[in-house]
Image (tube, rainbow, N blue to C red; front, side, top):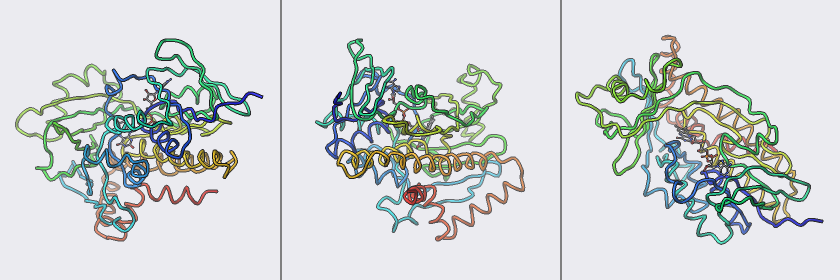
Length: 406
Ligand SMILES: Cc1cc2nc3c(=O)[nH]c(=O)nc-3n(C[C@H](O)[C@H](O)[C@H](O)COP(=O)(O)OP(=O)(O)OC[C@H]3O[C@@H](n4cnc5c(N)ncnc54)[C@H](O)[C@@H]3O)c2cc1C
């Protein structure tokens, strides 16, 4: 009978793969992490997630990551909704309403790249983690007792790594999901999102570190990131028919920024990129000994900052189940509960909420817009309603709902 080594193979050293690996290793499980990038290019990844919700901060604290991230980020207790059409702030939500619910009544604005940089350092230092950088995962097989991952290692050779379970933290293009034939149903928005980064302090105009700006013609998001130098990221919708080269011309980027806020001088544009936005959830998150987590299991619009956050929640939920199996406290049917809990969150919370968020910002009907804005204002002004609202946006409600699923 082939005996597989007692270890978990994690594909991908993104935020999800690393948080999972750290949680497993700290509970004395052996982990092998396979990551295509190497020390020479790991920090060259394009800007992506960065808003970390209170529920996620609690999980970072559990694995010892929070203290490393806080000095590199911005503590942001408030976020705003603005009406660009009228040039007015609609509502300010303050996480202080969650002071009795969490030790972290704020979000931490700390970019994905800083999170993986710090988590990777911790993974390198952990004796239970065998970290394989510069190693490309290509395929896998499984039987009743274990899994075999086939990789092209840092030396360019094909190698087979064996373990008890394999977790896809590979991101949206997951080979494991495709090899298993698991559907990834949903849709892709026609309009790509344009991200422009500028060195300019928007607080002098009354903005918070994090702002959602509604406009029937050109909704946007405005976020502050810690430097040096400090940067502010502005997201805009784009015309689906426009050419990428046209959208990304320096004059076109400058015109967008001046249209957003004329400041009487050119903005110092320090970065820009264009990305496609999908709303998709995998048909199942588990097949035998192979499990999907994070973007390999679900992708969504970044409006509301829920992709990476809910991926980290997958990681911690899954870690607890793999730990229980390793300790003989549960059998492996507990992984079906992971599937039920986290698919529910992906569909009923992450996807539903991000679709609603985009609709709210882009609403064309003036009567509906007014109604939505009045509702937001009333919610923000009433402490009990604001707390309820924040329990949902800070992702506590999704965790409580998942806990109730058997
Ligand atoms: C513009 C933008 C803004 C966003 N903002 C937010 C936000 O504010 N908050 C939020 O919660 N989410 C946000 N998101 C979403 C967030 O970035 C993702 O949900 C998150 O990065 C997913 O993490 P992951 O670890 O699952 O996958 P990834 O971050 O994609 O990491 C996957 C890792 O796997 C590696 N890999 C892939 N294939 C292989 C292979 N074959 N072999 C070996 N290694 C492999 C990759 O190199 C990578 O390191 C945003 C996304 C975008 C595009």
